Amino acid sequence: MTGLAVEAAQKALEMVEVDPSDVDLVLLCTSTPDDLFGSAPQIQAALGCKGNPLAFDITAACSGFVLGRVSASCYIRDKFSFVFALELVLPQFFHSLQKFELSV
Image 1: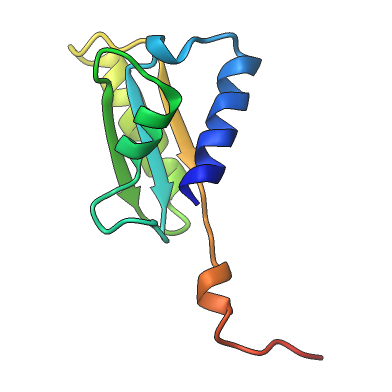
Image 2: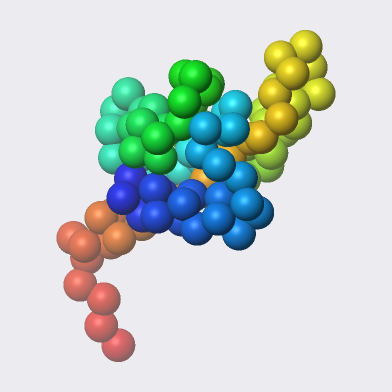
């Protein structure tokens, strides 16, 4: 899943013409993280973000998008002076469904 997140982030940053070195915050919102300790720092490193932007996971199911948006908004509007926040929302249920045989 981390590889998919990196690819999506690269495309999103290209679309809005933001260099990864300008990113201040990386949020990964998912209910199925690859790593128990969080994947956002791995995504940050893979993107080549400079200056050690804040990076953390928000482990939540359907509400992950909203929680991520509120968190990013707080960091941008508060005293942190953040300008660019990258929010990645990746629900992935494939691993959970693999053990079940789905047939009609």
